[in-house]
Amino acid sequence: MPRIHFHQQLADLKDRLLAMAALAQQAVEAAVDAYVNSDLELCQYVRENETAINLAQREVDEMAYDLLAKEQPMAVDLRFILAVIKINADLERIGDQAVGIASRTSELLAENRPKLPADIPRMGALAGKMIRTAILALLDGDAQIAESVIAMDDEIDDLNRDSQAALVQCIQKSPESAAHALLAIMISRSLERISDHATNIATDVIFWVRGADLRHQLSLAEAE
Image (tube, rainbow, N blue to C red; front, side):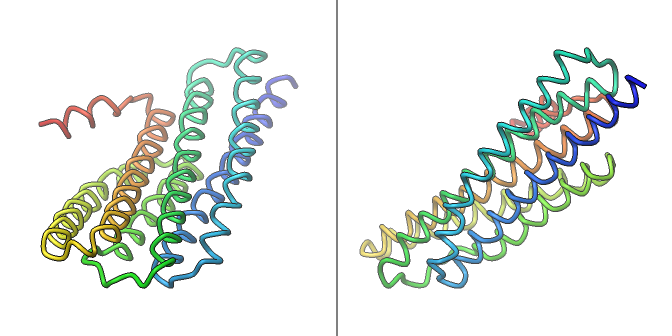
């Protein structure tokens, strides 16, 4: 009976983490929509949503640490709880990046922004896809799905580099657009960081399922 109760607690922890993930995903999608559609109300929604994300993070951490302390889990159960703690932190940071996008979009909308050479819609769509796929990998405990998230990261890195280069060129050619271009650079960088967090979530799912820690391997590959 005690083990049945423990596994029910693990299921409850997973459900709570998935709810947290849904909040973070909604924040990113709303922030990108706010930029694409010039929607100040969506910007405000993202900022208000941060409170719910922070509260959810605390609740998930408390549940996870309580299980570690009281149940002393082993093997795959221990890996799952450790993965939850790391994934929870990445989801909270995704929420922070979404707030940053919303805040910078609000600044852009405060003036008549020029047309900027940054493919924010495409980057936002890809970042959203990475988050959704990482959440699916978590839901199903599927390492192969998680690997597909890691494979997407290079594309958004390339898009970020292209956007940054185009925006710097825009500043050089039209200094009067510098303030707007710098805001777009920060939004592009936030989307790239969101993709990094989605990749982290995917590697944590692989760690949970297979017992393989890929984070240092990915860092080495990026450095080469």
